[in-house]
Image (tube, rainbow, N blue to C red):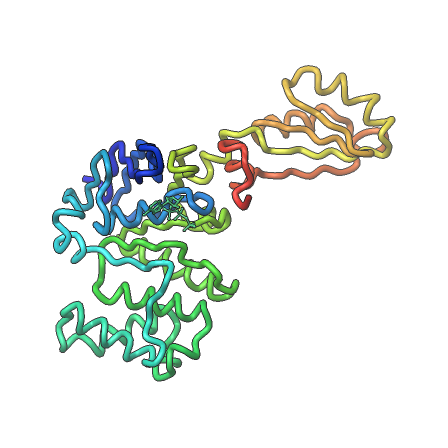
Length: 315
Ligand SMILES: Nc1ncnc2c1ncn2[C@@H]1O[C@H](COP(=O)(O)OP(=O)(O)OP(=O)(O)O)[C@@H](O)[C@H]1O
């Protein structure tokens, strides 16, 4: 059984003149236990809408949402007892210390009192905030607040963790620390559902990525699968002069079905994968008159997004 299953889900809102705006259109995804699943898309693409559906905060206009086989909207209590959400707005109490924030949460969620102290210490340790536990949260940086929000969510030892843009506005150091924590959670068998509009975040963390744009799936796969489906691998060959390059390039590339552009003494060749690049390299003599240097460039997820949606992620 999948941990999260969305089947042909639509969320729409009424607009003027009886029209409807679709925040999500026929969205189907399945997330398996222990997976880090990333929903990658620009602002307004429908990511938070998805989190709210999984969390039972809202119901779909059409389609089915199942979390642990249950309807999160109808079986709110059962589903929420097994999941935790870290929303974009951390909603911490600024006048309380980090530890007091966690104590408040432990009490609210009915965690056994005898477990409070050990559990809170463990979570503060996990997010690297033990030394700041007695400081007021209002004095914390954005990154520290997000780490504390993560610790708070983990207090209930959830099987499923929903993270809405976990590193939005966070400095590089805190971001790496949050990423490491997320990887640890998945290695413990927990399922992690992340929304992000950072390519690098999805690339670093995700077992699988869904690229979402205007409420619809543009592509789905592992980061590697998504990258290998597009012809964005580039082999750059440097020659002594542009003239030398033009002398030999035509003959050598004729047997390969590839595109080639010259930039000064550099030939930029689009190829499908590394194997083809190696074959191309072998057709050129090295040294004087031939290739004097070469570079190999892998596609980025940004290339993938552009390929599938025709737009840059950060338009
Ligand atoms: N209650 C509502 N009424 C009308 N439109 C809404 C409502 N809630 C959300 N929307 C619209 O649905 C679309 C998707 O919103 P959503 O918050 O899911 O996007 P997002 O991908 O999470 O964006 P961001 O990265 O900015 O958080 C947006 O165009 C938003 O304006």
